[in-house]
Length: 278
Length: 160
Image 1 (cartoon, rainbow over the protein chains, first blue to last red):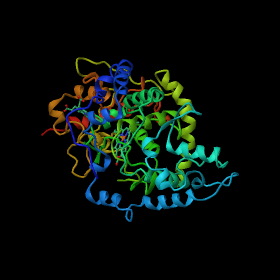
Image 2: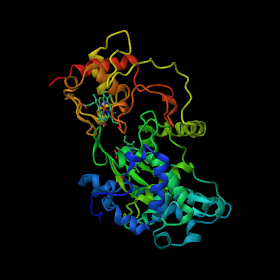
Image 3: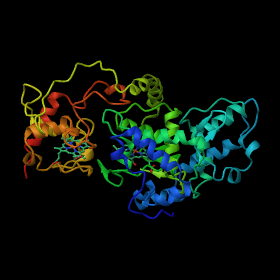
Image 4: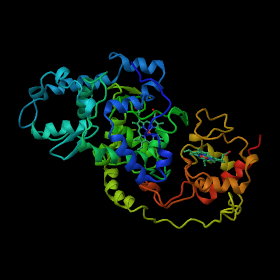
């Protein structure tokens, strides 16, 4: 799959400095960065590499072929659920959206997206649950439940190969700035920030595991360690536990802000969902 | 992660997030544990041991190699042929006892920021000024005073 060409430097990798003056630098950098269009941001950051680039040929092959990618099982369940009438409304996703291959093309690539009723960004899982409660008159699915993962995998699969395209809208800016500052904030008993591992030490070995750049290009994805499909928030909870930080609750605003920042940081990179990771 | 346990821990965490976040925003997390031993920094060193007992180098070696306890090999490598998975985020520990005195080693473990302000090496003997700490670790340093003395005693044996 095509990978952006490596280059020497990026503008946002200033975490060493920013930890010393967190607030001031966060504001300056976020304001400067958010003024860029997604395409400009992509050009500046063309040394970005997906976690895919850090894996060996066998795992890449497993991801690339639907026949060997274990997440295909979840996706096919999602395809079935897509067409099932449910809830008091007795409607299926397909009744409103038709064929996912066309109606859901590119959708996952622009989530989290601003939602007017919530007056803040919501992620794909929250969007699916919103449709369930508002239009199907069914209960929300639990985070990390099989059905929610199946549906989000099916929807995200329709964006495979398309560039991540978080909208450059003013309404998103405060949430992006919050996500960015969470990414650079030291936390947990080990007092580490996401940026210290993923910006400053990507490609190095953390006790034998290669540290990726933390691009969310592949979610939901099948992780060998989980022996199942999991969401981006599950991945982030793993990292937070590693820092001995208290992970945010599933669906917490802080998580969605972080997801939004990670997606924005990966703008222009191709979607891989559902990916495979070690 | 086993399926059965994850649901329970999720509920536990969702409650904690509400409890911890406001405290985290206040800058520090409340302390329930006894205070840390006081220590004096002289130059780039803590010359006096944190405990009355001398450290045990064998126990220190075990702590350094342990991925849950010392965590050192996540970032460092060292003379541990039995440990295939070592880190390369930090200088190798080989020869540390030749490069540094025991007092210098002690400060680097207790609070590496004093030597290198932006370092990613955690301060192993610190409980204040931390944010969003998982409840199991609130108010506790990463290593106890005794464990730090053990680690210092072990590192002092590392000569090329």
